[in-house]
Every structure is written in C-alpha cells, then in structure tokens.
Image 1 (cartoon, rainbow, N blue to C red):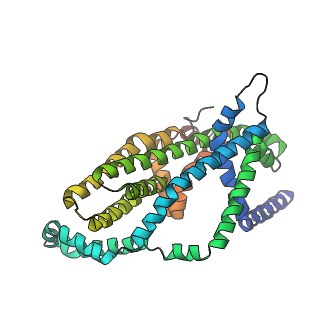
Image 2 (cartoon, helix red, strand yellow):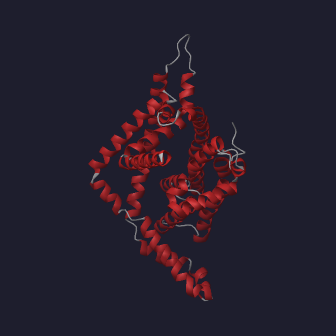
Image 3 (cartoon, one colour):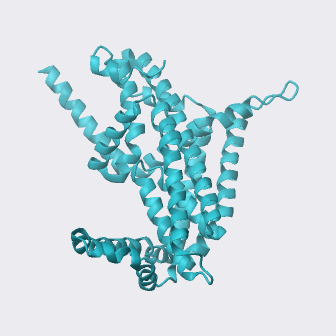
Length: 369
C-alpha cells in the first residue's frame, strides 16, 4: 500500500512539474538557450581566464562578463553586416512577379520539358510538379507575415529586449559558476544518486559542447562555400550572401535542411536571372547553381556531418540516420533538430545507470569516459 501511495505521489508531482514547465515555457526556453550559450562560450571563458599580467588574473566574474560581451560583439557585427543585405533582398523579392518568372522559366526550359510531357510520366506528373513548385515558391516569397511583424514592431522589440537581457544575465552566471546548473538539478535528486548524476552531467556537457560548436562551424562553412560558389556563377553579392546564410542556417535541420536551402537558392537564382539586363546562357547558369549545391552537399555528407553528427556525439552514422527519421515522423522539423542532443543525453544516462544491459553496452560503447 505504501509503495502504491509513493508512486501515486511521484506521478502527481511529475504531472505538476510538467504543467509548471509548460506554463513557464518562456522562462524554460531562456534557461535552455543560456545553457547552450554557456557550453559554446566556455572555451572563450577559459581563454580569458588564462590571461596573466604579472600577478593579476581575471576573476570568474570578470571573465564571464568579457565572454558575454564577446558574444554580443559577434552578434552585433553579424547583424550589422547581414541586416542591410536581408532588407534589400526582402524588398527585391517582394516586388517580383512570380507568374512572369515562371512563364520565362517555362519558355527557357521548353525544349527540355516538352519531350518529357509526351511520355506517360510527363502527362501525369509534369503539371503536378510545376504546380507544387509554384505553390512552394509563393509560400517562400510570402512577406505578408513580415509586414504584420513590422506593424507590431514595438511589441517585437520589447520581446527581443527581454529575451536578450534575460539570456545574457543567465549566461553570465552559468559561465561564472560552471556547476550552477548541476547544483540546481541535484536539489531534486536523492542523495544515493548524486555521484552518478554528477558523472552523467559532466559527460553530457562535454558531448553537447562538442556538438554545438560543430554546428556553428558547419553553418559558417556552408554559408561561406555557398556564397563564394554563387558569386563565381554570376550572382550579385547581395543575393549570394542571402542564399548562403539561408542555406547555412537551414542546414542544421538534418537531411531536409540542404534540400530546403537548395530549393530556395534555385528560386532566387531564377528570379535574379529573369531580372538581368544581359543574362548568360540559361542552362549554363542554372547548371552552375546546381553544381554549387552538389559540391556543398558532398562536403556536408563526407566531411561536416560525419564529424558533427557521428564523431562529436560518438554514435554510428546509421544509428543517427534512423534516429532522425523517427524523430521527424514524431515531431517534424523540430524533432529532427532536437533528436541528436536528446539522444545524447539518453545514451549518457543509460550508460551510467543501465550499463548491465547488452543493448545499452552496444549503443554506448563509443562514449569515452
């Protein structure tokens, strides 16, 4: 009877905890973002901490403050460089007549598409595919939401300010007192699990730090490679940078991200081509765009993803692939993005507390102490 009552009490407390987390989900999101930033910025903190001028060394507070300021410098420089390009691109794309663009594309591709329409597949499929592409393009270039956002700019700016201040404040303390998160979690853990939980959190911290730093490197490299490639193809700097930034950021969505980035790149490249005064040969131009995204995809699959999604979290590539597919079916794009960090946490916990099971031993054998 007492055991049953204990389980009922735990169930009630768990339900209340979930309700509280959902009710204060904004605060929880601040904590999660701050925790990730503190993981990523820890090397900067350690570098500042190692500075020594005669007998003086920066304290934890000063090192944390300079680390947060460094993050802000990166953010401000990024927006200072990218926002003018983004605003110009939005203005350019919002004035595009998509119907005219697709009519031009149909005319330019007519010699290639017409023979396909004579086949059985073409009769049934070409028009459907064209319709889907047009609908997707309209969705991509629908800036009505942005206009609504700018209409309520005051509320938006207020929300951004609260988010930025809260995340900066929390990140400062997470950097200053590295084990602050651990100490907070240990308040809810029975004493006989304390050592195991400390070991679990240390392993999670190492693996997730490696993963998130790898993600930042991946986004940067893909943005740079796509931008440079499209500049060589003949796109203007503004369009090349916007496509590069978009491709880099959506690439954090495993497997689907590169396709979304390539589709957006082709659409913008097509729109730009139609607006050119003296355009190059169409097939050569579009083949150059295609080649850029093929090269980037090969680099991502052969170099970037094995390093980030496999080596960084110590898991087999097939294991990661199946995991992401399952997460995508369950929770869509958000699930695919969160799959690897969540799976990493589950594997570390399983290794610490359920290592006697053969399945756990097999799935966690590559995790280093």
